[in-house]
Length: 200
Image 1: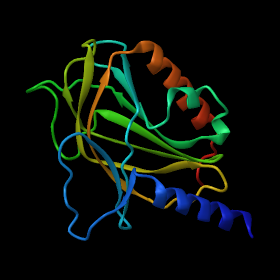
Image 2 (image 1 turned 90 degrees about the vertical axis):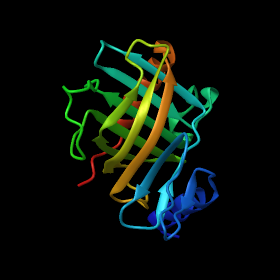
Image 3 (image 1 turned 135 degrees about the vertical axis):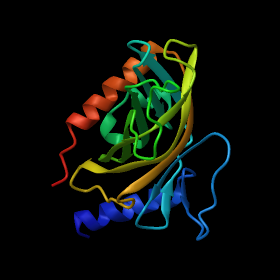
Image 4 (image 1 turned 30 degrees about the horizontal axis):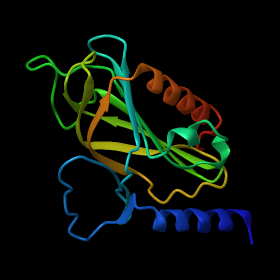
């Protein structure tokens, strides 16, 4: 069997089996409560990871980095090439302030990197949107909601099957202040991004 076909079938099997992945109903019912959903604009497919690890760190009152993954802590210490799961990095670069920060559908104050890993293959979706924050960098926990953020595949290994394409992000997130774990997850994000070729 051709390598790309085999990898595509493997990715499809993971996509169908993971609890984080759902087929969207035609009516596009909105999720309520805590959520993270990256929904394809082109196809009736979405990924909804259930995060096991959450952490954030901050540089100043306006800048913070939030990390989320459905991987177990032990898995992060192993061979990254064997991982199957998702890792999300939200970089807040402007803390919204009433009357000072433009709050429009086109406003962007956060960059998002969403990495999908499937048994040695990886796809890096990148984009951004407006994160309406709950809390301030430096608090014991930080999060917020993002609606209408957009991401698209920016990097991918040769055998990665892009089932999402251009996608819309709707999320309600919260992470505890944990600089050590955030640092570990940041290192993994850097490694995976640097080793994944850009999509031509």
